[in-house]
Image (cartoon, chains in turn red, brown, orange):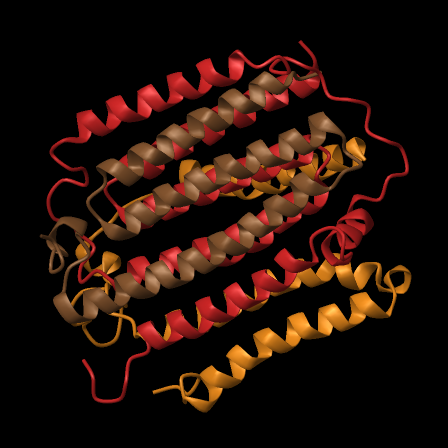
Length: 172
Length: 102
Length: 118
């Protein structure tokens, strides 16, 4: 067993354990903090996959902004620190069965695919992934349209969300 | 070296845990947390396919970045809706937000 | 490439261990004799009223939201800006359109008075 495999297994254990805590903890602030652990584990995985830029983006966007937004939302939507009632629906065992079936089905599906256990090709030396990403994002024969559409999507999200969450003067 | 199957199995497990969170949690914010887990599983899949297919083609990473943008937009609007509903109806339990339920 | 990440990982581990060690050692060594007055929020001064969990204003959320959107914009613009010299005029125009669309959203929120602190 190589060092890379040991790092992967530790990271995977951290990711799955903290993800389990995210969906089962009753206190939502703790759930959001466990989410940060999960996201950080995913960033470590991206680093092991030679995707350094994606790893940094994961930390900057998910941990730096999205998790903070979650914590703000939890703070804004609760009157007291104590939770009322159970955190899970009455039919949670049905949800667990569906999730287990999904997992089994996904693994069964991809394990039938020929490239399931293939090893990674050698990473090209001197390859600048960030520059290649820039070329892919702005060249007309690649992804320039998704690039601009992403901007429109963010504009719509900004205007819509600010309008919905805005608390007018005098409104409780 | 780690085979691709490890990454795919991990992301399938993460996706299923997120799905359990979406289906079983009562609180609307907790449901959105589950959706975040699912989107992260998708991102792990995309980046590992990029690495194991041909790293010179950047499609997988571009997809992952678009997923980041979509996740940010989804979280922004979703949490704004939850906050707005909380202000008007004083609840964040998804079962109690049933005005449009038939 | 991978060795850089090894150093970052070692740095993170050491950076987590040192504060943890400080907390654990001080918890082990410090004497602990609590009493109600010592445990109150302000040992001397006025008594605290109510809970420590207060309702925040939605205004905080709006600022975090605007930050999130421009954070995502940074991610798209970072590779673009890094290789601006090799990309040519067309890419520059695309980037400026991208920024312009998002600035329109900021101007909207600003004109509506949503960025003012109420």
